Image (cartoon, rainbow, N blue to C red):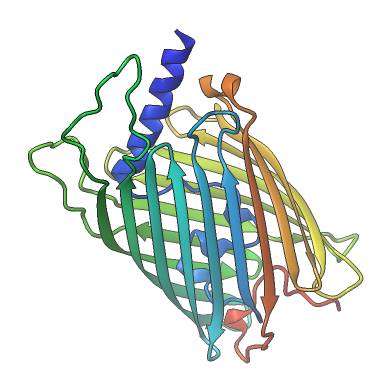
Length: 329
């Protein structure tokens, strides 16, 4: 009975991902790389940022999701930024790949009170494919479906838009992702054609009064899928401490995710930590899934590595970040 339950949960997970052509957001955005969730963060800061992310979900379950991603963003002129991201995802016999090109423009609403507004736009190309080379006969299914004669695949082109508001060390971003509907097979009728989903991310960077090298960062991330109304919320907290070398720091934190129809009942929970040293970055995150799958796996592991380079200070305060770029006074 437990095996049947496991197969059903895995099947539902792969079906949801396949229908949406939109991968779930993990905690990689907490690895000091908010560009993961919003194009509006592109170009904020003095450096070109490159981050590579590797994620293995549900370790111990055969065919569980495995993901690799690369993110890069940098500023052009004083008020604009561009970025690109690419990912490769494997989930059982399904494959997803995608690339995203982003542009952001940053405005100063009020210089004295440090209020800034950023607008972002992304163009996405996603491909979904089913591998048939692993379809083999088994004692339970002695004959492979003869109608499956090639890899089934489809490509989706789409757009994301968003805005980011910053007031001193407070930030709030909102995104509408996958604005265009997807073409579906009208004879099947079980796959939603709406990929639209909404994401909101807000937080506050607080500097310790007793130690100016210490920062605290509580944040909340919300995501809702328009097709069926399902949504989730992350509650996060980070502690960051700068070292004697300007720009170097380390941080530790934790994330707590729940489904919004089950308020505060944990879905994922886990610690994380990272370090920036001489422009090189490393972070590790661990998540435990609190459901029936927990008995069959050792959790989700994620590693982020990166580098900041091509330092070039902007003449506009609207592209100065609230974190990481703080200089001692």
